[in-house]
Image (tube, rainbow, N blue to C red; front, side, top):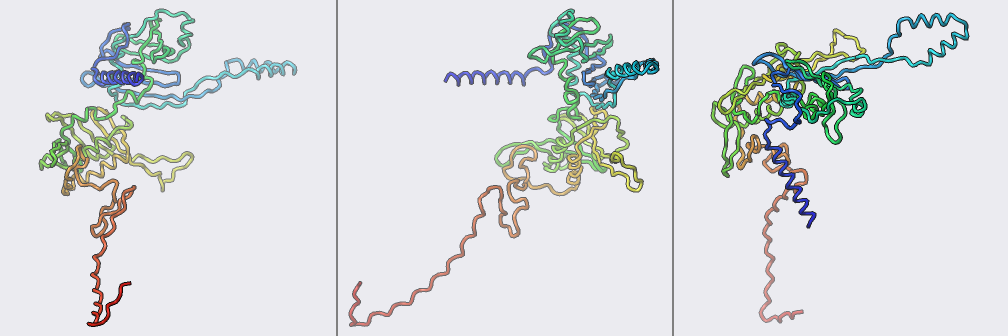
Amino acid sequence: MKGAVIHGVLLAIMLIYGYRTWTRDKTKLPDMGDVALWDKSVSDISSVEYKDEHKRIVRVERRGTGADAYWWGSDTTIESKKQPKPAATGSGSAAGSGSAHAGSGSAAAGSGSGSAAPQEEEVEVSRKTKEFPIGDGGEDLVKKWAAGRALRNLGSLTDQQKSDYKLADSKVTVTVTAKDGTHTFLLGNAVYGTGDKYAIDEQTGKAYVLSHELLSALEIGQSSLQLTDARGFDLTKIDQVTIEAGGKSRTGARTTQTDDKGQTRKTWMDTETKKASQILANFIEGSNNNLKAAEYDPDLKVAEMTQVLKLTYKDDRGGALGTLTLYKREKPGTLPEGQDLDPANPPKGEIEYYIVTERSRGPALVRKDLAQRTEGELDDVFSGKPEPEPEVGSGSGSGSGAVHSINPHGNPFGAPHGGAPGLVPHGAPPPVPPSPAPATPAKPAPAKPATPPGAPAKKAS
C-alpha cells in the first residue's frame, strides 16, 4: 500500500511538471544565469558562429537591411587529410654534403635520417556547405546570445585549472559579432552532470560557465536551427486556400458539417458552390502534409524550372498568410566515375520537385513521390466530376469517414459480380453458407387394405 502511495505522488508531480512545461510562456527566455556578459538587442547582433575540433562550422547570420532583414544559416563540414610537411630549406644540401664523406660516415648519417618520423600537417580536401532559412530554434538562439548571460564568473584561471577544464588545448569556439565588436569564447569540458560548459572570453581572459541553452542548438546544427515548415506560419490558422494550376483556379474554405447524429466536424467547401467538397478536403490536407522542405538550395534559379501549382493561404479574416509554389525540373544526369560521355547516349536526367515560399528565400527540395502524388491529384480538383456521396454516420475530421470509401480490412475490389458480399480476409469469419433449398413434400404412403369383415384380428407382437 505504501509503495502505491509513493508511485501516486510521483505521478502527480510529473503531471504537474508536464502541465507547467506545456503551458509556460514560450516568449520568455529560459534562465541562462545572472552574470552579465553584455546587454544587447537582437538588432545589434550580426552573426553567431560555432567551430568545433572536427572541422565543422555552424553559422547564423543576418542578411538584408531594415524591414527586409532576415536570418540565414549554414552548416559546413570540412574534410581534410594528413600529408607530410615540405622539407625545410637547406636540409637537402646538408644531406648531400654528408653523403660526400667516407662510406662509414654516410651510412651513419643515412641511418640517423631514416629513423626520424616525417612531420605531417592537416590539408583541406573538400568543403560541403548546406544553407537554410532560420526557424524558431535559430531565432531563439540569437535572442539568447543578445541577452548575453552566464551561469558563473570564474575570473582568471591558473594553467592547472585550464588543463582541468580542457581549455588549454581546446579548438572549439563560439564567435558573436555585433555592432560594437566581436566576442570569441573558447569552450572546454562540460560541467559534471550538465550540458553547461566552461569557457574563456579570449578578449578579456576571464572564464565563465555558459548555459547549454546557448550552445546545444549550435552543436546540433542545421536540424535544430532551420525552418521546419517552409510556409513559416501556423497551419491551423488556414481558413481559405486558392489552388492555381494550368490556367485554372479553385478556392476552398473551412466549413462545419453536422451529421444525422448531431455530431459536427470541420471540412472544406467550394466557395463557388457553397457545398462541402471531399475532393478539396483531401487535396488541401494532403498538400499540407506532402509539400514539406527536405533540403534548401538557394543557388537554383526559379526561372529555369516549370511551375506545377500555386497555393495562396488566408486566415479567417481574409488576411494573407502566405503562398507556396510547387516547381519541377529535370536534373542533369551524371556519368558514373571513370566512364566517358557518349553523345549519342547521354546520362538520363531525373525529375526533382521544389517549393518556394516567402520564408524559404529560394527553392527547397521536397520528396519526389509525395510531390508527384499532389500533382496527380490536380486532375480530380479541376475535373468537375461529381463529389462522392457522404457516408451516413461519418466520423469527425477532414477526410475521415466523410465519404463512402473502400473498407481497408475488406475486399479491395468491392462486391463481386452479382452483388454478393466479397470475402473478408485477415481473420474475419467465413462467409455465411447459402440457405438450403426448400424440401420437396413427401408423397403419401399407399394405404393398407382394410381387414375384411369377419377376418380374425392380428395379434400384437
